[in-house]
Amino acid sequence: MGGEQLGGRLDHAMSQPYPMWARARAECPVLRYDDSGFDGRPSFHVTRFADAERVLRDWEAFSSSINGEVIGRYMGELILALDGPEHRHYRDLVAHAFRASSIERWERELMVPIVDGLLDRIAPLGRADLVRDVTSRYPVQVIAGIVGVPLDDHDRFMAWAEDVNSGPLDPERGLAASRAMRDYLEPIVEARRREPRGDLVSELVTAEIEGERLTDERIYGFLRLLLPAGAETTFRVMGSCLVALLTHPQVLARAAADPDVLHRVIEETLRWETSVTMVSRIATRDVEVAGCPIPAGSPVTVLTGSADHDEARFPEPEEWSLDRPPRQHLAFGTGPHQCLGMHLARLELRVGLAAVLGRLPNLRPDPDAPPPTVEGFFFRGPSSLPVLFDPA
Image (cartoon, rainbow, N blue to C red; front, top):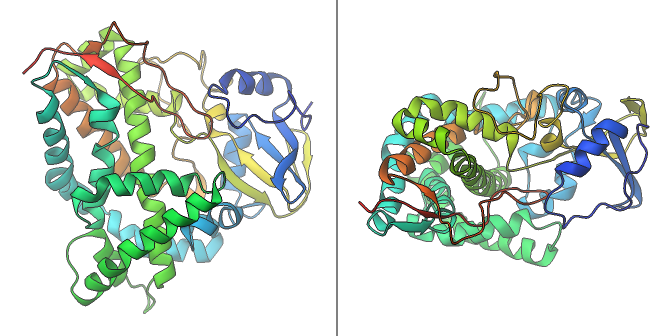
């Protein structure tokens, strides 16, 4: 049944896509949508793990260039839109900024002080909304510090990140946010070019391989990508980690007593509720996936959220289980475009979760609020997390 259309038009507003994706994996593993919004071209959605992994690894048959068409209008020249040697060269230029020594320094200088400062405000209160008070603020402040912009401006960066990410659905708002971000960052980039510091912008403007440096447009494109990718996605998955813990109180107690458990909490949550559920590619030639013919030039959406719920790879995938045997998931993608910031994200999550569990004893859901849930189609995470705890 590969390539058949399942259930009519895709509802972009639906908040719980996993039942639809489970049916697709069983009945129609490659979904075709004729009304896809890509200049009349049909698009194809890949739902199973093995097929998703194949598409993400085969950059010659499935190009990333479509990202320039879809989101490049709002972010500028993107590393996500390049393939082959050009992509490797660009990636090598920016990868140096994410070396282990930098990440370790950011833990000490940014992550710990920022999350402790946020928890200082709520620890005496005995109650909080962890999304409002912690998860929506912590990663964006960390990214602001890494980039080298004032932490007081993190609210603006959060709004820009959301608007840029939503550009394909609201072009006017996305373009306005893109321009505002460029206007804000330009004097910072020029100042770091004249006088480099120890921040990421300094690393980007001074990075050089064989005499070549990043162009201005690629610097701004990378920064526009980093702010949404490094802030919004991490805050969403941190919220999902807390949903998992709050709905599994025995695991929460184990993690509070032994922070080493958090590594497994994070990896299982990344599989169970990735913050970004899909990745875009375009077929460079006529190709077939799971028996479904895909013509050259067709947009191909890899549903990583569905792939990480594939029963053939993860038994009982809808269940969050700390004791699940470790297997590679696709939350950070795979292949040449695997997320450059995945080690930073994992460290941010571990530091942030350890601080929340250590500073808010007897953490539990607020019984007067709705049960904590994860929602969303393209991007997933809890919209609120009302909790109670013992006041410090």
